[in-house]
Image (cartoon, rainbow, N blue to C red):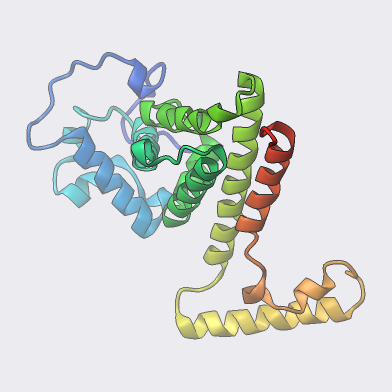
Length: 243
């Protein structure tokens, strides 16, 4: 997905964290307050609603005043993702057992992704290299350290669990967006979809998925925990020490 350049800005070379930005900044604004406002806007109205102008309006300041803290919308998007990444770090709360640790991180990632579904769009659309994002990756690797596997094997385990989690968030978020927010409209929409799914199941054209289609849209199984257990069972069978 290609995003238009933001108002009156040019993209700087390299990620925002790698540049030595010594421009003076107004005391009435901070980078953190700007990023928090952008997150609030994205949560409320979606990622497309985020711009330098919309954040300035949210904070009741002139758009140009934000450029002393954030040089472009691209930087703002990266900072938004990294701020939320920092909130997902478990730190001392990370369980010591590798399996419990992976479960805890995966569930925290799932919950945060569902609370802020626009982060998945950023994850797909942009390279994430911020310090908090790297802390998250380091914590994933720390979780599997007790397995005493090579760095390459550890990374394969981590990415498999993370890909499962991100895929789950992507699917559930898409389903939630499909259903109208108004309760009456949502009920009518669900009834229409369920009739369609039942008709498709009864057609006999889908003999394997047909039984699931008959359950209806709202009754599709939540397979996050089952999929996570499937992955971790495989890891345990291959890498965990046996008594």
